[in-house]
Amino acid sequence: MRWWCSATDAPWSWTWRPYPGVWLFVALLVAGYLRLRRRAGPARAAWRGRHTAAFAGGALAVWAALDWPIGALGAGYLVSVHTVQYLLLDFVAAPLLLLGVPAEGWAHLAAGRRLGPALRFAARPLVALVVYNAAVLGTHVPPVVDGLMRAQVGSFLVDLAWIVGGLALWWPVLAPPAVAQVSPPLKIAYLFASTILPTAPAAFLTFAEYPIYSLYELAPRATGLSAHDDQQIGGLLMKLAADPVIWAAMAIIFFRWSSEEGRVQSPAVGHRPPAVTSRTPADG
Image 1 (cartoon, rainbow, N blue to C red):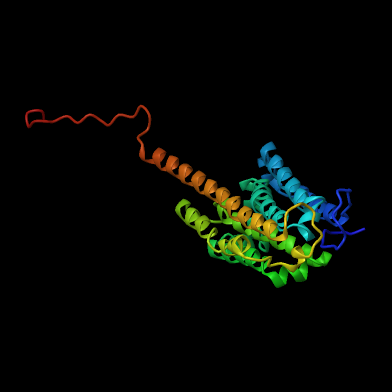
Image 2 (cartoon, helix red, strand yellow; image 1 turned 180 degrees about the vertical axis):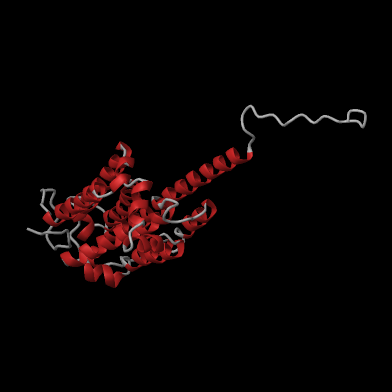
C-alpha cells in the first residue's frame, strides 16, 4: 500500500486504491482549522456558515486533487490530469481555504508577534509573485518532474509546492486591511502580472513537437491518447482554464472598486444644498 500518489510502472486500473497519506494530510488541515477557530478569542464570533462552507469546499478540492483517481492518474500516467491537479489546488482550493477565515480571524492572527509579520510579508504582491511563479515554473521543469514524481516523498513535495504557491497567489488579494493595504488597482495589476510567466510552461506543453517528460511518455497508457496529445491537452488546460479565473477575479475587484467610488462621490440621498439668499445693505 502506498501512502501518497506517485508514479508506477503498473498498468492503469480503475480498481480503487487507498492513499492514507492523503487522508492524513487533509485530516491535519481540518484539525488545524478547527483549532484556529477555537483559539480565535473574541474573533470567533465573526465566523459564519459561509466561512465554514468555503473552507469545507477548499478541503474537498485538496482531497479530490490528491486522492484516487485524480491523484494517481496525475502522479504517473497523464500530464493532462497532472494539470487538473494544479488547477484544483491553486485556483479552487487555495482561495476557498483563505476565505474560510473571516477578516476578524486573520486580524487576530496578524496581531501575534510571530505569525503577524509573516502574514504581512507574504501579502506583499512582489513577494507573492516570486513564491507563486517559483512554485509553478519549478514544478514544471522536466528534470524536476521526472526526478520527483517517481517517489512518494517527491510527489508530495510537488503537491505541497502547488498548495503553497496557490495560497501565496491569492493572499495579497484576499488579505483584510488589518493585514495588508493593497489598493484595488494594485490588486488588478498584480493578478495580471501573475498570468505572464506561467504562459511559458503552458506553451512548452502545448507546442513541443515531442513529449518533454519521460515519466509520462513511458507510462502505461491509461486512455487512448498518445503521450504527445495528452501533453498538448495539459498545456491548453493550464492556460485556458487558469486565466479565466484570474480575469474573473480582476473583474470582481474592478466592479467593487467602481461601486465604492461611486458611493463616495455621489451625494447622500435626500440631501439638498443650503439655499443661498442675497442680502442687500438695507437688509442689514
